[in-house]
Structures are given as C-alpha cells and as structure tokens.
Image 1: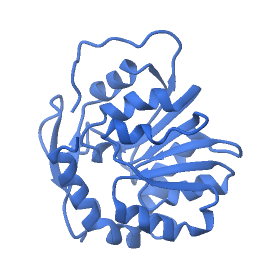
Image 2: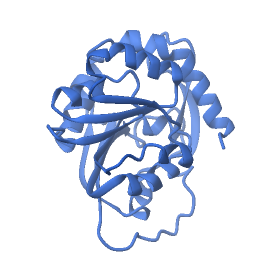
Image 3: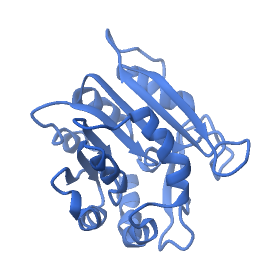
Image 4: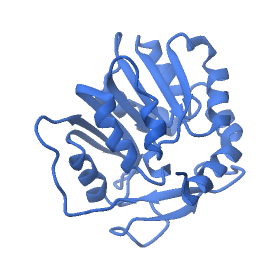
Length: 243
C-alpha cells in the first residue's frame, strides 16, 4: 500500500521530472560525471553480457551508459513522467533497456521485475535517500539477484549532508537538489549503521566502499557502496525497523 510519504515524494518528482531531465541532458551534470559515476562504475564494472537492474533510474542516463558497454538493462522509476522522458531520451537504446514504472517501496510491484533469469547486478545512483521505505527493496533484491549478484548504490553521505541536527534517528526533511526546481523534494535520512544493518539482515556483505566529495574538501558528499550476496543464513539484527 502506498504511504502518504511515498505519495508526497512521488508528487514532487512528477512536478520536477521535466526540469530534472532538461537539466541533466544526455550526459548528466558534473557532480554525477565526476563524483558519482566513476566510483559506481569501478565497483559495478558493467560489461558485455551483464544483466543489470537500474533502480530509480531517472532519465535513464546511466542505463544508457551501461547499455553502451554491452549490458542489457531493466530500469525502473515510480514517476510515470520520468519514465516517459527516459524512454524518449534513450530511444537509441530501447533494444537494450526495458523501462518500467515500479514503486521501490512496494514489494508486490518490485516482484514484477522478475524475469526468466536472475540479475547479475543491481545499481542505484543517488536515489536511496529519496525512497521513503527501503526495506522492501533490500528484501526483494535477495530474490532478484543471482547467487553471485552484487548491488552498488550511491547516496548522500548521512554524516555530512543533512539539513537537520539529527543523525541516529531516521527522519525526513525537504530540500532542493537543483537550484530552481519547481518543487522541494523529500529526503529520507538514515544513519550508516541503519543502512549497513539492513544490508546484513538481507544476506549481503559489504565488499566495496568509497566516500567522495565534490571539489577539493575534506568532508565527503556521497557514499558509494558495493554489497554482494553472502552464503549462509541472513544476519539477525537487534534493530527492528528502518524507515
């Protein structure tokens, strides 16, 4: 069931979709090109023959980047407008990218992404902080990825990028990703331990991690994490909820 938080977030992204697509263009902005994409690509290593799930794909620029390298991609976003714009912008790659409208907070919808084989890899560029509830996503990824599957995600650094004084307590706040966007969007803050415990609870181990900053400064703006499916039982955690 769609929560009020998810509805509010979706409303903002529907309002901002055309502005966002126009701003990002075909190559995305410098922040994505110079800070996010290099480390994500290093940890993901997209290559010919890969079967990759692109989570909250936006206008599909990274989906196209992977397709250019020979991967086949299923890409999804919950914004119908954004998916329509992605299909238009990435029309040259539609034989290698299957765009879908799916809500990352909805387990039933996520399970529709199953195909006749499991994905080798999954990726999410700067979207984890935009998703109101990431528990269903991590639960379903265990089913969608093959036994050697990896998930690489980049998200804003919870220690240094926030508009509040809270850190340990999950919370949300409104912010502006791109100056002049039509509507403020909702950010969902989670501590590093909450993010990592959720990985462990769902049978993943962390085997790649970077902290990157935009420009020459000490405090990083983003974390880039690679997790892989672990053998054996899922790790139990005393932390019961991640919102």
